[in-house]
Image 1 (cartoon, rainbow, N blue to C red):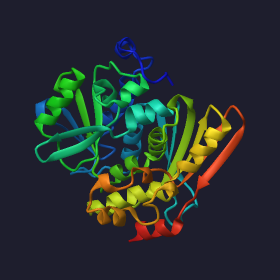
Image 2 (spheres, one colour):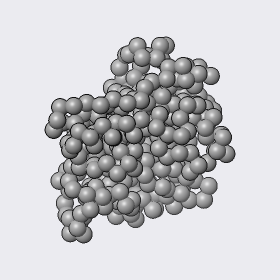
Image 3 (cartoon, helix red, strand yellow):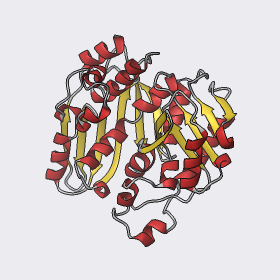
Length: 330
């Protein structure tokens, strides 16, 4: 990973790798296979391309898997794999990347707040790195110069023209060069792409704990695919519980072994004051205000950190199959 805190000149330089270029074949394939994937394509406000993955379209697991790889900027792979971890919820979303910091934080993280009138959604995907409106990109020392913009929005409604205008202005592209992939939380595609953020939440928490991002060399993660629900709060609770109580992440880091051990100890969701109840209950207990939830809760259930320079590994946290069953089966 490039060093954080770039100079202004570095921020304006051509990126060492373009997320937009890496993801373009995946976006093209998603559009080409839209009928087979049960997606609906349309031209929305300002002629932006809208990919409906669960609003009126049926979508599905495979659509969600592909969208999750698009969220990773073309630098990651997502597979649906069988496992006996939480019977009968035995299918996991397994995530790996060739550049976890750039793929997860530079692309997959839902960090771009987009709002207009009654509409609000957090944008994720490679288009974030073109706009680079978040201070996170200054720390990453990265900004993309791609020509087309792709964003994934967890929403059940098509964004208004004002949102498309903002994206076009921030990214300096024509609205017709914008692709918005819409994945409601209650849809199958939405469920998969959210659960597939298990590695990303570990990277985000490592960043919140001030672990040097440039020391993170690699990582893999997995979490169980939760059953969707037509009720938004139930669906949101289940997808969060899949990671908080069923997620597993293995990070490979450089630096002192003691730093790796400290990261492993502090990273799992078990370290949060809000740990121990289904997320839906926690959320309702805070009057449905995300900002009242302990931000350190959002992390995988079990974490292993390997100190590459010393050959030592440290594991902390653990799964909670009883709580998973309570959440998924309720």
